[in-house]
Amino acid sequence: MRIVLLGPYYPFRGGISDTNQELFNSLIKKGHKVDIIDFKLLYPKLLFPGKNQYEESYKFFKSQKIINSINPINWFFVAKRINKLKPDLIISSYWTGFLSPCLTIINKLIDKKFKKIGIIHNSISHEKRFFEKILLKFYLNNIDKFFTLSENVQNQINKICSYSKGETLFHPIPEKYGNRVKKSVAKQKLNLKENFKYILFFGLIRKYKGLDLLIKSIPLVLKDNPEIKLLIAGENYESINKYTSLISELGISDKIILKNDFIKSKEVKYWFSASDIIVLPYKSASQSGVIPLSIKFKVPIVGTKIEGIKEIIEKNNIGFLTERNSNSISNKINHVLKDQNQKIIANMEKINKKLSWNNFTKELLKKI
Image (tube, rainbow, N blue to C red; front, side, top):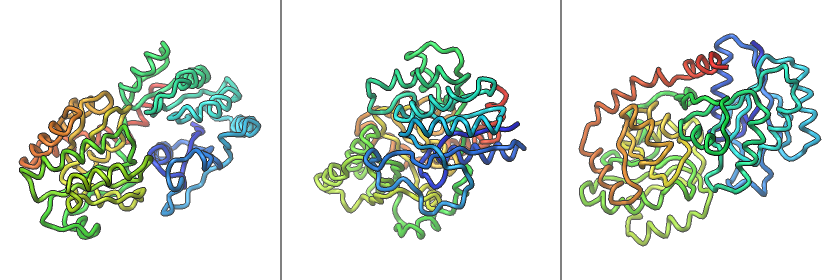
């Protein structure tokens, strides 16, 4: 089958680019001919909240970087290029309303004889802008079928519009980050002291992720477990000052290690391998790419009881759920620190294959 993938790839950084890379690799392994239609301009600098849109350590990756997200004339050119390829299938990635006009018009201009599907990572942004529902409908009206990576996103779409052409798959376990290393090796690599246990908050720092709740829980954790430290590994998409001020106010600066940068792909395994717990203190979520990473590296999860997080933790028994407050979070962290968590680790080993990219692409192609 000839397949066109429409979305960002290396050197663009982040979860969407990583997921697209894994999808490409999996389809190639299955013997399909795959063309990548990539962005030459994804976000204008004024609209990008981070420090850099690119991952400096990326390996060379061949794609046609021709899409300009803010140039409608360019979209006609892109659609014409895709039509010339005569693909059997076009797969586009949707995660933000900002890109809806671009992705929608391109799909609309692609010949109707070619099958068009979408993979929906987020139906609406975490900031819930009022016009995003309209933009989502606009996109969905111009593809033949869509797939979500969580039941939560599917339910959100069902509330916005009653489309029968959507199905839920799962968020696959990433393959690109290598395997878990010995805890002692990981600690040495990150210059962490051997005699401490480490609690990890990983990923972009944004308001909805509840890092403030986790920081406030640390003094409570320290009462029972004085030999712990909190690792905060990720770039901030909001002011970092409110978190550093909170840490100072609580008098726990010596218990916090803050790596306020985008974590390069080659370093991810060390952060997870060094950690005893990963905490997702989210106040809201559509889903989380951190959960598949935790499963891959076999790190027990403490996550809040919210849609998009609780389903996969409950269903697979890979962690513990907590209320969205510091007392509850600290109680669950202390519970995990007391246990060897062998059952949770065994469950993670079981579902690693079940949630593989091989199974994901097999299910995806079977359902189109």
